[in-house]
Length: 350
Image (spheres, rainbow, N blue to C red):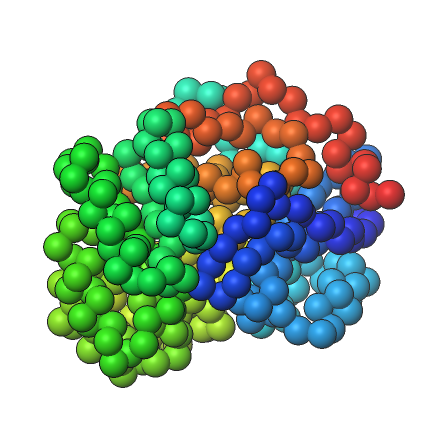
């Protein structure tokens, strides 16, 4: 088996704001496997400033994987426990190599164009006018679930944006989720949750910074609206630690980003524990290209979770790869009559 890798820089169509700052580009890495004249590809969706594997020797670790590809998937995954994005890229690449079609990892009604995945519409941070424009666009495009990133504007302005939606749409018409990305201070988080709760919010992601276990446990116990852990899962790598975290905090939901929590295998461990403790969950992409997004979407469909998923990120980039994925009326579709970009894997090998 031959293995190579390629770095790629995704460019945002417009700057995308979070509470951590504004994103204009995002690097990603691809592992390409070749065996018996077949090729497979996987995306290592490194997220600078967020991933546990955002380390200076990241590329050296990928080179080590390429050199030691003969060890096989299971051995490599064990060696990469603190490099979840590379774990995920390897899982994809091996599945891709074994598949009849390198981009059909989990054949299903979804990949046969017979069944879409319901997704949320993502509202990026910005000034009030920009956020309002995004909200109007998502509603016009048929989304029934909207996720609004908060924490960058004055909180009262953010509340007024949410209030303006609720004046027009009931919770049955539009499900509202908010994502604070840890922006709230522990001392005033509960007050803000109480203010948000009056607008029938479905859930809030990561209200306070990860690592504040006692404070998050208390919030989850007394919160007036459901809390979903997101960043809190990053860096929690073995099953015992995962179970301890969920038993301690007792969140209402967890959010799974395969690139950040150890790929399919790591995510399935979280799901098994969540279901054991009656904790809800859904899957979200982490700004991968269409190669990684395709893998996440196909896998997500196989899990039969009917909640809106966070998989609408494919249109964010100017230089994303042409793929069968498209969004329409708040759903992600796979059009198997649309071809992937010509010579995509071959071009990435160069």
